[in-house]
Length: 332
Ligand SMILES: C=C(O[C@@H]1C=C(C(=O)O)C=C[C@H]1O)C(=O)O
Image (cartoon, rainbow, N blue to C red; front, side, top):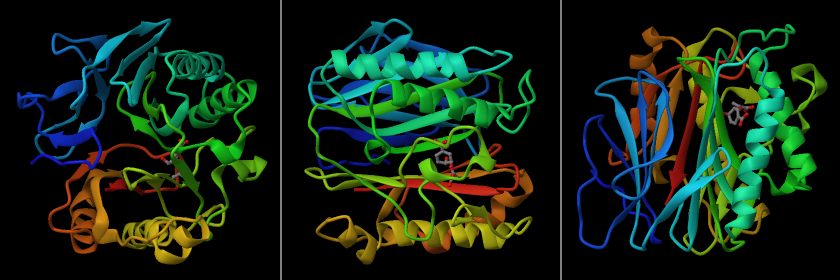
């Protein structure tokens, strides 16, 4: 099934092995595979970029196709690969396995921030990060996720990007060592970044979660297109993980957090003209720590979201070792 977006960008979920349908006037911006082995981004024959993330998708594997109705230009700037269409820019990169990640992450993010500036798409809309051994310690005994957050925060600080301008993001585990990432940014500043009143802003989490807080907002709204990109959302209230060890309760809390972020009261508070419900969400990704929880989470998500929504499930670690499930999606 193809998911139509209201502007020229279209994101579609497919099974692995499917190729993008050749439709007149559509150009591939990116094909992002979630598969066995990481493949660093490259410019593919279709003219857009391709990459493969080391992720285990439940079912028949998973590829995300981004297409546009405009001509695409793709290339590489330093270690960042990109594809753009005059309106949107996708950047992607990979940090190879390393004993520690802060410096490489800072370098990689500075590369993305330079690329979006120089190509003229400076307004970040959404970022996805896939971090191998996310809950394990690096060579200095710091958890890899915290190590990653440190480098990312430094890059935003050095680029003068204030916390309030941070966009929606996902930061989850991966099945292989190293870090893969991709981002979407736009030419126009049409974004509103949303926080959740039930949660402390991630960039204000207290120091006990790491030397630098995670650099993201809970959701990013794109004004003209009317899209709302919801960050990876888990069972966190305030800044604390709640319902330790209880998958059903954690899943319900994550769903409740999303409902709160996209709902009428919160969108009105952020100046948006309308609010949304869980059944408005599509292109949903659900990250489940333990495979044996996937069926239950599938049932809970099936009941919460629209029967027409695309939902992909992955078995993967999550940024805090006490989190069992995390959910993201797009309202469009
Ligand atoms: C689940 C949380 O954070 C996760 C980590 C993120 C990151 O570091 O970019 C973004 C969203 C989630 O994937 C949270 O802190 O609520």
